[in-house]
Length: 217
Image (cartoon, rainbow, N blue to C red; front, side, top):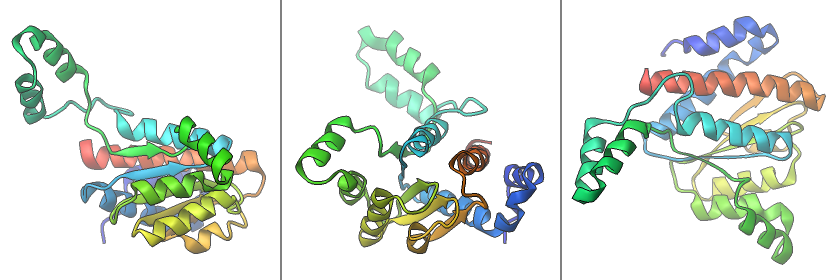
């Protein structure tokens, strides 16, 4: 078994309240590594503050978080090959500024789809519809819910499992029923929304930093 990433070890040292979750955090990291290594996509969703957290997670995965992630020589060559002579400077501009990404999508940002679902079907169906439409075996659905009772997150988890998408649940207490549907369930020992979100932020920052080191370190 590989040792726990240093960023997660540091997380536990700084937040001893999370020490009982060591195995779950390691499992969450392993699930995310398998997803990205296999060419999969991570779909992230939540409500309210957790929706903002989902956007935050995607921002950390899709570009450099603590370090630059220069594109490969092959990518630079492909950009040059795709650019007619008059766009050579643009190809160089792109190659110098694009970064390697860990493929992630926030499920909270499709305004047209979200409002159409709310108007035409049901507001609690928007996450499930996206997971059903986008998800493929080997992908992961990262669901954040402070209580674990958010119906749209739960429906999304059921839809994910139906199409072979792994479920990573990040909740507070009690964490059910979302936790019961998860392949990996990280339940922080708190119930107050602000306290749960505080611990969630520490966890997803550490996971994203550990992933960056794993793939680009």
